[in-house]
Length: 273
Image 1 (tube, one colour):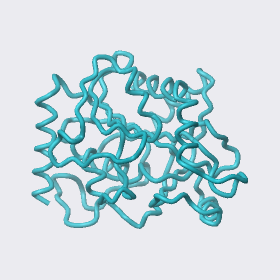
Image 2 (image 1 turned 135 degrees about the vertical axis):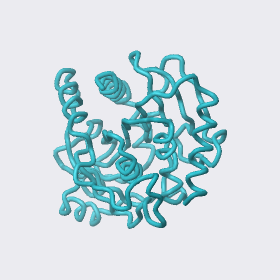
Image 3 (image 1 turned 120 degrees about the vertical axis):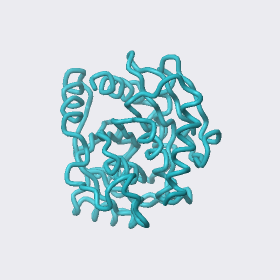
Image 4 (image 1 turned 30 degrees about the vertical axis):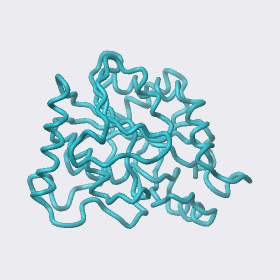
């Protein structure tokens, strides 16, 4: 564990050496939301490949770089493209950037993702604010030896997604007429899409949307004491709800179609912090 902590510190120091100041707010961009970075003011880009011990993103639609700039005048650190277990990475590798954020002094984390709608009241192109999650991967980034200096052995998960941030997002969506639901996100391992039977199971277990990311980062962020806000772009209805096959191109096309609305929601949430 001491080696892992050393790697975290080395990565954080390499980032500090390239930026003038570190924001206290960070944003992780999921599939199809990389265009958000284009609106950042005076952004400094640091590819993951140039950060010690950092893995690189291999998925289409994920840029693979840290960005430091401002959104509506508020400084923010952006992770443009995330890592996934289905890429072959271990949970500790996926959540390494969150540990680095904590080391840098980040205190609030916004997580985005593309998800499949399980709740039949949802529709393609709407957004779901996470109020809770279900970890259906069978993996946890905290398994193994624990270093108390990085967080407690048994972190509380009874209120994962910050209520005040959710209140702010709800008010913004209402004011701007943005379709924002609130529900439970369930993470599957991937990379195959879920079967209709798995979606029926997910609905029976209380899930409103399914995806292949976000939960490991959330677990580590809460361990680190970060405030967490999560939002899904519902890019497709999950398997068996509509009589059509699923594919990644559909995910990207829907994300592209609603990107300006999604950006508008995100930047206003950031500005309201």
